[in-house]
View 1: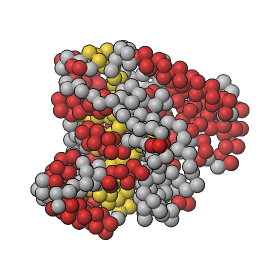
View 2: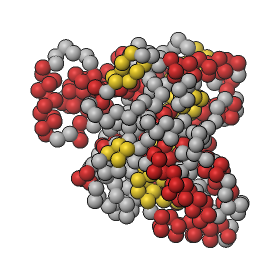
View 3: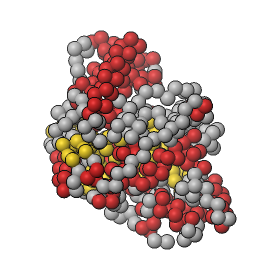
View 4: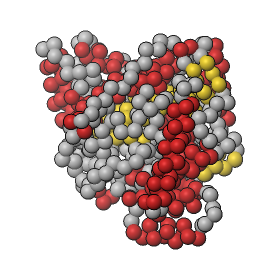
Length: 483
């Protein structure tokens, strides 16, 4: 089989199976052979269910012969982020205490993908608690970037993006609260979509004894084509059975057919989180291309004040994740909070957010909704905001110290890795959808992606723009040495 098939889109793979040009079992065995040969280089796929996958693939082939394909992903081999429940497989989120936590039921989103014909054969690596832009944990070890194994693939959906870029899987699904879909897509040169908040059910994406999904966090697809993002979102989006009693989802579709149909603002950097020139350079090229293509481009317009938006995001983000900490950590942060009055650095925000009262949270939430109103006004003048997902290309593995103590090099100057949370939260805290698409490679040979931010519920607008970039500007390019 042609190794180039490993880098085909999921929709292409499904079409080949429906047209009987390749069998589902044959395609699964092809990907399993690549995993056996190549996965040890990056450790992206960490859990396998080969026997169950072969059984499902055989059923898919039988359905093909009957002329009864199951859906748009009929026969496509795929993996899912380790944090999604798959019946019979462990769900640990990288925590050693959950090493033997075997899921009894498959997550609703994964179940929907399987009903559409996808064949889940494994799970991909994550950081502990899904709380890093790297993907390493004491259970499964470290995942590396296929573009450069000395670099991170991102996190927390780092295994997802690395497996896609290396041609080890046909499709992926991840989760995102602080760019956990978007950063890995940028670092690994693939596509990712962070949907509008809460349009995709997160049932089955929780640790034991957890029932609340919390603020800001979403689930969404990663792929090698923006067309796959559209297909996967259509499959996964919508309420669960309980919510479906009262509401249904009807996302507006985009009928735009060319880049000149769009009015875009480009924000290539910000004083709040300066972006390295290697990334900014790609945005300059993109701006020039879009102008030549006839799009309306403004490089100065900003929807809201970056500094204000950053603080609001950090306060609400760290409040949203505060339930994961133990009592001793909470007590330490409470003491630190009292000792850091007046400070405005990340750790001071971290301490305050994790220990704030509910009354304080309501005040921050109110400020968030004020930002939402300003974003809506911005979108009366622009269709999209284009911005980075991170301040650098994929950075070297760094596994010691706290995240705010780990330094990135931005044009030769040290920058705390947590500073780039700004690019996650600028749109994320106000519930907006954003799609990441490849722009090309920086001088260091590593991928650069663009984050395409759209108005709430206009997910298909961001995805359509990514599809047009894929057609007219840059498409997915495999990393060298993985064919």
